[in-house]
Image (cartoon, rainbow, N blue to C red):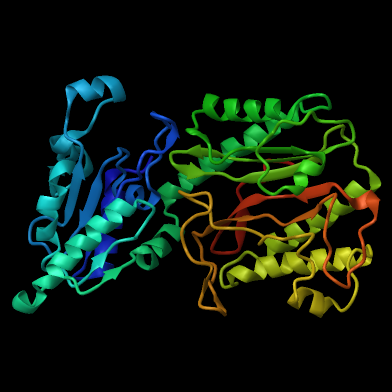
Length: 431
């Protein structure tokens, strides 16, 4: 697990970058399942990255300019009656002992105490999130401080999102983080291998989803990193299919996209295979085309290459293949430039991976400058071809013959950028 020293080092690095600013990070609000029943709590990833604190109703304040209190935590006080119902709380004193805070206050004192950490700051670093009432609270504090700025000559003159500073830090995984990612990806891989061993026609998609998620929990994972996708037949053409209600038929391709969350870090794997063990001619052609595209894309993951290069490599292979099959016609460069392949391949070939499944960090700066891959980046590589039964082709492209319709294939691995190239963290799952 990640120890308190690493969280401290992250805070110090972040505070060095914000200078005379004050950063405010609220915990994630509880999510309601129905009426007064809540989902299992999941902490906000930015908040967790800087604190390691898992409780709701908390606010972290980082004020590097403050003489005494550079790291302040507002949190729920101890309350034996409430703890009987919803679990133990760290409390104010526990926060000082366990999380290295310079000062801690009950969350009810936020409005009273927060201004002292803002009044000498030159700006507030705060992300306006989905909690509109908390957004208004921070803006209200800022407006009150600005009203007295002329007399004092100090105070935050702007509110700035901390993401452009914090998220590049999150993109670069430490050794401790990579240990968590490796565990999450290893358990995810083992679950895929486990469920594939008994997948067969006649089972329902939900039976396999249940088995995967049972495997995650049995091995010590928090649970699935996202709703598991078990898509048979034409359901594989739905990118985020989560109904998992169809009975699997003989002759189907089965697409399973599932990963676990371990220690708040995530795995994300997709495999597609014939459920009866034998590809049809058309299924095999599409599968091998996607596999070739994925291997080409993975080979383009290395330090110094830009983020778009592995996607471009996959697109080139897929367009070549679809043209060879007569499913795309015309000038190859024009097809790629105008994205006429989109009815078959409508998403990018991957995303950052870490505390969030689609992890923090931009992919490019402005319109043209893509992020350069560096050792410590973790990402997915996942091209696919999806030939929906009702596919709508681009004008000027041929209609798709019936024999290709209903075939959906995606192959996804989790990849670490290393100093010399790449490491496929999910190579234990056959493809």
